[in-house]
Amino acid sequence: MTVGELALQRPVDRALARTSFKTALAFASVTCLLAPVAYMAMFSVFQAYDDEGYFLLTLKDYLAGHALFTQALPIYGPFFYEVMGGLFKAFGIQPSLDAGRLVTAVVWLIASLLGGVLAHRLTRNLWLGVAGQLVTFRVLATFVNEPLQPAGLTTLLLLSLMVAATFKSSRPRAVAAVAGAVVGALLLVKVNMGVFAAAAVVYAWAACLPDRWRRLALPVLVLLMAVFPLALMTPLLNREWVLELAVVATLTAAAFGVATLWRKPESRPAPSAGWMLAGGAAVLVGCLALAFAGGTHLEDWWSKSVVLATRFPEVFVWPVAVNAAYIAWAALSLLGAVAFCRKYARSADPPSAGLLRVWAGFFMWLSMVVLPAFLLALPLAWIAALAPSDDRDNPTGAYPRLLLPALAVIGSLQIFPVAGTQLSLAALGLLPLGAISISDGIRQLRRAGAASPGAVGVANRVAPVVFGIVVAALMLFGLVTATEFAALTPLGLPGAQSVRLSDAKAAQLRSLVGVLDQDCTSFITYPGMNSFYLWTGQAPPAEVSSEVWWLVLQSPQQQGLVDQLRSKPRLCVVKNRRVLDFWAEGRQVPSRPLVQWIDNNFVQAGSYGDYELLVPRSS
Image 1 (cartoon, rainbow, N blue to C red):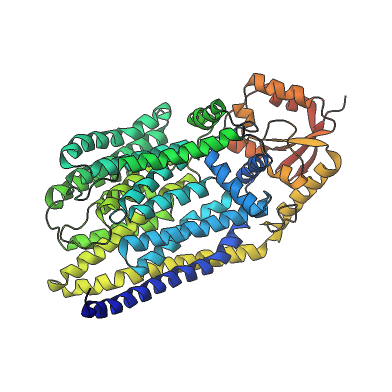
Image 2: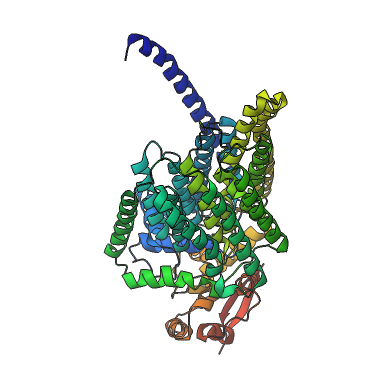
């Protein structure tokens, strides 16, 4: 390099350094501003169905040296327990409601930061990057309902995969290894999420193959992706909402498949299959080896983490609000994809398409916080897959346009059979697609400036306006959160000093825990509500920590528990009929031995809001 070239390079380097510093400062500042909101929101909710108690109790068992899958009926794999267990052990933290919520708040903030970095790398637009961080934060606010739920870890893994995809052109081997590792980790946290991620990674890989192999593999994968929702939901297709959801997902996948088949082939080689397999194998082998070394048996992991998970639709479902209008919209989107691709997929599309892209991207982001409206925006995923044909220096890159829509479309299936927190996690797949679409629209409008000077002005205003709308929404959320937090009172129970509830609920829980401490040598909860064991410092006297033990434990297993519990002196039962009805979904509670024993041998000794304290019937 000559002296002259060096002289030119130094100002460029300084400009890049200033830009990088400004970007890092913006993301760091927003993270600091969001931290108190995350704290207040995280400590202002306690759900009676008590998912967090289950995960805290099973994590406590794991840290105490118990082998996984022997103390409970988990449907989540060992990677979650090994990562969270290692984190708690490294920092000397004991599982408690306060600790679990602090960890979840940190996960929430990190995930939001990753969402912002992802949006920025896809668009190179700081307005959209910070807006993406705020949108991610808002959509993941559902974490407050189920602190320490593995959804936090799966969200970090998926966002890491999305961010890694943006480096494919510069670090292809590393990206392939990360993709394989993330898929392996997801398989060992929640099997269905691992399968969905694997399908998306394979789809994007096939779309990058040399033309001859691409023409053979891609149509087959498009067909499989389109029929997969129907195959997945076959056991419950007799339910109207399931059939409608399957049809919407099929039409959405078909629209994305059309765009993929019609788009210009990827000029760069596909990610290395060898590196992907190596990354996945390393995580799978390492994680399972650690679990087996701790006493876990292969058959326990398979039966409880894989087989039981596939049977979950038989145990519990939570319908999603979907109807014929969603089907009509998805069908219209498919027709629009076909028409647009036939006319513009490989030729210059008109400048007016820039407005369509901006609208589609904004609608995607808006739908993320108006759940389940994201199912209306998801059929537009194909728009992000098609780059404007005359935009040669587009910052998004070709590979993210294949992988990210595939992750969004296939990953949306996680809302079946339970559309609870999964709705927000599925909606998160629209974050990068919205950023891509808005950025594409802005760039397309700017290029139309020569023919339409007003288009440039519109383009220059889009990102700041989107940012302003997102900031306003977050300010409202923060104001509501702070107001509610101030109106609540600390629960004041062991390990839950910082949790805040209404005066009445806090008093009811404190009174009930006080009675359990004073009058009950041991107790069980019906259904499983495991935070009571953490508050009292007691362990479950038998294997009844699963929230739905009364549904999943068969008669021989329940009879064995009855035999264990008969000899327990001063045994009590904490029952919550409202939570029981929530899990039962209108079904009759199966009349099996432990349920019968409780009904026949215990009577109510006190009522604490929705909770009942049952004690042995006098002989």
